[in-house]
Image (cartoon, rainbow, N blue to C red):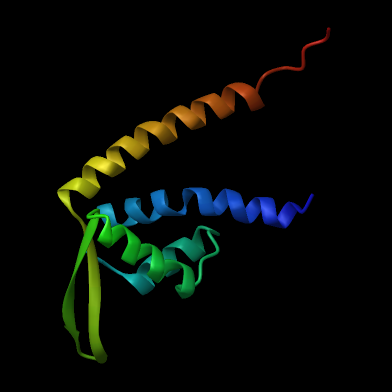
Length: 113
């Protein structure tokens, strides 16, 4: 079994949730998302982030606006839609249940039979 592959799959499984959380704080630029994800050791590249943002936008969970930049081309800033906020709230409930369930399993003492 490939440990690195398993670790990558675990990160991918929660990437969408983390991105929605970042955007929920207010309008955010994609490179700022990449920076925060990288600082949190959620290894993500632009080639992963942009298609995911497009998919979330097409699903009606987020929207964006173009803002002129003093240092280059306009920047695209993302924010959650009302549907995106509701979606994130449900994901947060699911996340909390998963953390609780995982803690119950991983913190349980070894039982002798």
